[in-house]
Length: 119
Length: 406
Picture 1 (cartoon, rainbow over the protein chains, first blue to last red):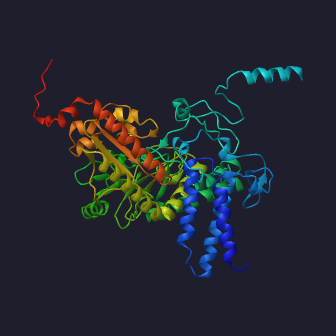
Picture 2: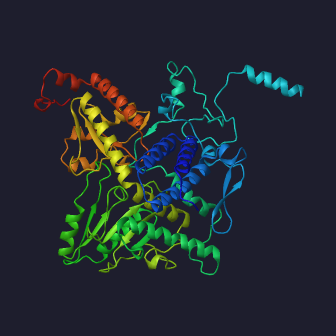
Picture 3: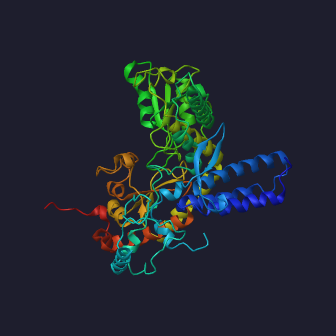
């Protein structure tokens, strides 16, 4: 696999931020957006390609976690969302209508009333 | 068809009352359900309608009581709640093997956080069970020359950090066992059982963004520390804690420990900044506020403040939009002021007016600002109503008053 290009990293960054905004719980949503920004900012000057690849792989794994728990239509190309099933050794995604976060969502926090729409 | 349109017309005429509208289960304090629509329709008249605000949930500022599950931990646990449901002690099939592998991996993750060997970690149902295992040996074998020192690493009420390394050094030189309840400290401050000469350590899952109902006890192997099992049975966990190890829960505990190890520095920096913000803002706007606990040896995420001339319970009730507590959750049912505050020599009246603010990984700056604002507003309001405050404003020294008996 070719070394991760700058464009690839930026795509990953944008994808992660986009998906994180779909967390229905205020605290998870704000944490994810903040952590992703800070982590990418912190590592922006890393030069070693091996280290960069390791960071990119970790980011991809975390993107998978966010996708499974936010289950946005965009993440699945407009189709239904995921369920946790196992094939052989990996956790892979199967198309079923399960929204983990949204299924058990509850009312918004008192502070979201005052939140500006940017978040 | 006609019936349906008639019903729809009738339904439209009735004022919309809160009730279940979609398939999602209704839980939580209020009986309103969040729509599946992307934007929650917040009523536009929130300024005038206090009822609208009451359907919104309070902020959570009580992380010392328990913490929310980190999404990464949930992700690690779910496969073991759906498909990987084998008993980790089953030796004869793949379900057992994969479950055992997960359990051992989790053990490694917990051990790595505290600098221990995985063979020294025993899974339990929580820090309370771990504490009981650790001190049971003392009750069984109390002699002049054997003893046990048991100290909390970080206090859950005032956030004070005990000098663990120094205590460990003293205990090891006197050949005394050293146990520490690190429930509030694990994953938040760096701990190494070998540097700090700890023999026994209790770990709690739900204090470090892991699941409830699981914990671990660290039991040193070199030199060997002998403990007696609390529950006997099939001999699991080296005979020290029989019972099937709950794989989904221990996987969650392991994942929580691994995440904590990675995030410790970032979280600590952020929490310190937020704690500073909270205390500075409150202390700048309100006089007669005391922070309980040593300011130097202090874990920033646990702030215990006493507001003079304000009753703690009434302030808690006033701050109904923020989930807070005064004193620890385990003693919250009683009306006694915190034994910890009494032990550090706090005045009786200040002990009754203490509030504990908990700042954690998921706390935002907006939540802190909102909490500070409400706190200042309500303390001022309660003080206005307080005759003691009035007397203080007039310059009377409360300690000089002789209260008469009626």
